[in-house]
Length: 256
Length: 187
Image 1 (cartoon, rainbow over the protein chains, first blue to last red):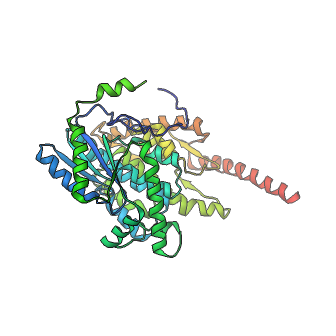
Image 2 (cartoon, one colour; image 1 turned 90 degrees about the vertical axis):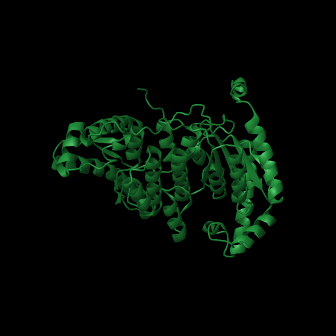
Image 3 (cartoon, rainbow over the protein chains, first blue to last red; image 1 turned 30 degrees about the vertical axis):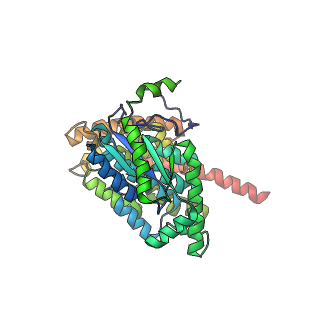
């Protein structure tokens, strides 16, 4: 047995890591081989139309004969009731908030995502870890700590970031269902005015997402476009990716 | 006084997960870290600020040994808990595996699923599973003693004996603080 050396890793998360492998510290009991499945993550703030796009993508992929599994933020069987309860009681602080998200993600990763990858499914992920990283960033949670925390996440094969501007975002959320406490970042005590708080919070979220685009190779799409135009663009890029021969050789060639 | 796994926040999820035997080593680890974070912020840091003594029945070291024994990455779990306040004094009550098994069996008839490490699938016999699992946990603790400077108390002796050693350790520790205060007063 080796003795443990408590070192802090300088690079807790390798944004350029190979799709299908771990970003950082792995789950030792789940070694990641090259599995046939693919993860396609659809990221973006509220109001960008993620669920509509995923619904349409699923249909399109299934018609072509692909097996599709959907997974979504805070939807794990284990954690969903707790997260909802915690949100309703407003007792969450930023740290426990992050840890609840991470637990939810771990549960879905082990029970939905990895089995689906092994079985050759396409996993459509409604939000991925970047949502957590963005929310942590806005709340001033230590960057290195959150990136270490999510080191066990598998690098998606494609990450689409559906981007909208602040003005469109605000209008869409207000039109859809109005603001809620957490979406307005009221826990951050930015001010008593819920609208101003909401605006400030969403603006900093957009900044966080923008800053991650390069780090994690987001494919940035303008989500202000019509649903079908955006869908066509997604299909075009996903179709091209799925038509590619397995990129194993190419990735290995770039590894030092 | 704060106890391991006692925060109201995550109780429901932990309970559901344990009842259904649905926890993986990772979610087991993360749920306990969430519980710890919740207690740290509500039950540990405020009394510390008020100058009180916090007695913690288990601390992050429990996670380090138990989660690692379950196969979670050793470095990852340490980094996970890097938000924890370093205790002023950390005491490890060490028992040989036979004693801990004996005590547990004397206490009640049936070992709990996760307590016995049954989730690892090493043995379908609870006692045998506990022995295997607890053996690994104890190995991990030994590693922690040096790494984090834990004070070790041999817990195979009588309670009176242990309490005597424990009190001596604690009072030594507190006296140092008293001296400091005294010096401050003179200054």
